[in-house]
Image (cartoon, rainbow, N blue to C red; front, side):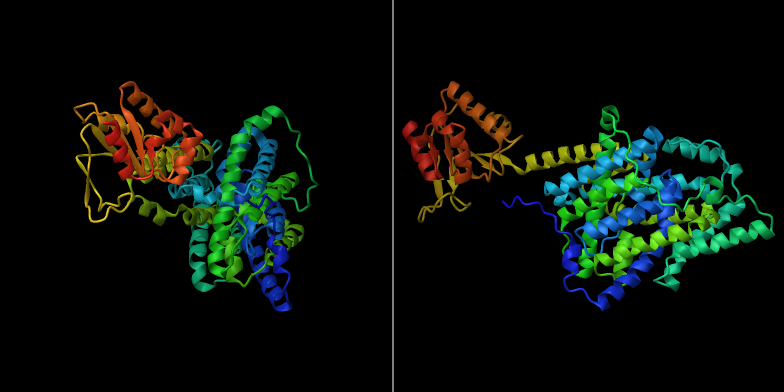
Length: 558
C-alpha cells in the first residue's frame, strides 16, 4: 500500500497547459461567481449570528485557499446554508471565541481525514441521513427567517424550534406590511430571474431593486419601518488582523462534538459538490486533497473572524456554467469579493433585512430536497425511520444530535440487514448435487446422509447473529446425532464473533459426545480457523475440503 500523503492540489496540474483563452474564461466566470457569492455571503453571515462582513471575509479567505489547495478544478468555497444552524448554536452557547476554536478544530479534523485517506467518507454516510439533515436544516433556516421576512417587532425570539413558532403565532399582529411586501417581492424576483437571465443572479437583482425601493420609501414616502442591515449592525470595510484565540482544555473538550459535526458536514458537502462538478466537466477530483484543502481553509479563516466554510454546490455550478475550468476562477472570485469589501461594503447598510430573509427563504427551498425526501418515503421502513429520525432531530434538537443518532440508527439497521443475509439451514436425508455441490460426482445426483449424522449449511458471512441460529435449528431434530457436519462452502469470511460462536458450538457438541466436521471451507476461512486453533480443537482430519470427504469421515465415526 502506498503510504505517501495524498496531497496533489489541482492548481498545479491545471496550470501546466494554461493559456490566454482559458484565463479569459476563468476571469469572466470568477467575476460572475463573485457577484453571485456577495449576497449569499452577507445573508449566511447574518443568519449565522455574526456581522455581514464576517460572511464576506469567510468567502474571501476560504474561497481563495480552497481553490488554491483543493482537489477539484472548479470548486468554489465559502460559507453555506448547511452551517447556519450549527454556527448559531455554538455562538449562543460559547460565543464567538467558542466558534473560532470549534472551526479551528474542525479544520484539524478535515486535514486528518485527508491524511488518513478518508476521502471516500461520503460513501459511508447513508443517503437517508444526508437527505434527512439537509431537509431539516432547510426547515430550520426558513424558521429563523420568518421574523425578518414579515418584519415582526419581537423583543425576544426563542431559539427552540417549537417555542419559536409559538412566539410567531403570538406576534401575528406585529407584522409590518411594508417589510412583508419587500420580502415577498424579493422571493418573486429571485424565482423569476432565471427566466430573464441565466448570468445575472436573482438574489443580486432582488437586493439592488429592493434596496432602491426601501430608500425611496424612506426618503419620499416617510416609511421608516423597513429595517436594514445598518439598523442592526455597524458595517466595517477594514480587513481584520489575525487573532489566535486563547485555548483551554475545558473549552476544547466541550467543543469536540460540534467541531466534529462541522468537519463531517463540511466533508460531505464539499465532496458532494466536487462529485457533481466532475459529472458536468468530465473530470475526477482528488477527494483526499480536497479534504486537506478544506481543512487548511477552516484553520486560517477563523483567525480573521470568519465562520466555517466548505464547497458550495450552487456557486460551483455557476462557475462551471459560466466557463470556469481551473482553480484560477475561484481565486478571481475571492479577489472580486475583496475589492467589493474594500470599496463598496458601506453600501450594504442600506440592504433591507426582509430582502435578505427572502434570499434565504429561496435558499432553504433549494436545500429542502423535497423531491428526494418524498421519493425516500416509498423506500423500506428502515430507510424511512432513519430519514424521519434525522429530520425531526435536526429541527427539534440540533444537527450534532441528529447526525450522531442517525448514524447509530443506520449502523444498527445495517447490522440487522447483514445478519439477515446469512442463512443457516439443516439438510435432511440426502444432499442434492445439482445445487452447487462441493465437487463433481459423475452421474450421481444425490448423496445419502448416514444414520446418526446431521448436516447443516451456512450460506453467507459467518459473523454476529449467525451462530445463535444453530440452537434453534438443532432443536428440530428429535435424536442426538453422533456427528454434525457443517458445510461452509458459501461462507466468504468469518469474524471474531463468528469464531466465538463456532467455538462455543464445538465445545458444547463435544460435551454431548458429538463430533463436529467442517466441510467445504475455503482457503481464507481455513487460514483464520487454523490461526485460532480449530485444527487442534476439532482435529485436522475433521476439516474437509468437500462434502464427499466429510460424509466419508462421518461414516468412519458412526
